[in-house]
Length: 262
Image 1 (cartoon, rainbow, N blue to C red):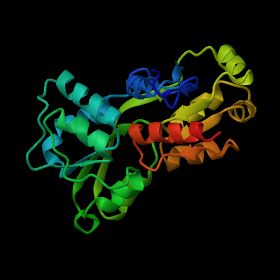
Image 2 (cartoon, rainbow, N blue to C red; image 1 turned 120 degrees about the vertical axis):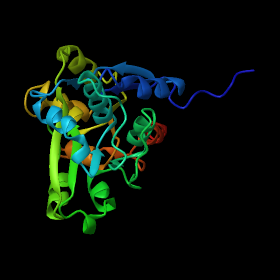
Image 3 (cartoon, rainbow, N blue to C red; image 1 turned 180 degrees about the vertical axis):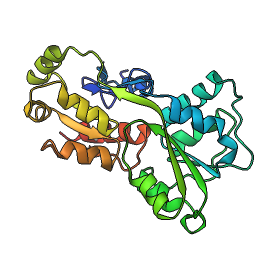
């Protein structure tokens, strides 16, 4: 007696997430029957200069808040903390904010509980969840990527906070066989392309001659983890499907929904 086919059986899904993070998405898709093609368009490396983060670590006791804007920020921050000879514990007086549940979970894994986790996982919501009326004169450390949107530090500075942005890592475009990827998209061998950040979109487009990315994406479906990433895809002239929940689980649900309704 045969069982019902898995929802993504016979479908090929391109995962553009970094090698360090691709497994969680790829494994979930594979469990649903998808053939996963993992071609990272983003790689995480050390920031150009450790000095801002090292200075912040040396002054950790002076911060009223530490804000983490991604799981990657948590991983690289605590890695650098240990490399500088500090323990993984943070000052008791310091309050912690995390941009979402995955970031909060990464902190929990290191024995740190987030005081604030917004309901919607984006920088604007995190800024709104902070006690803006109480931040005047307070020192706030933002541990993040070297290149990121400025809405969070600008909002906190507008509330009178003394904001220190400390890059924990930066993103680059890894070596990719762009010709092979282009050929597979051109032949229609990829049913859906996933993007988990604006950087994955920008870097994907950079693999091809200007304007070519849109034509290739038009030959597949596109699913994004959230509205910021989706807005970057729209700049290419492509309308993506967007997850209602800005998590990997929400993205997987979106992939299933899209590929179940051709």
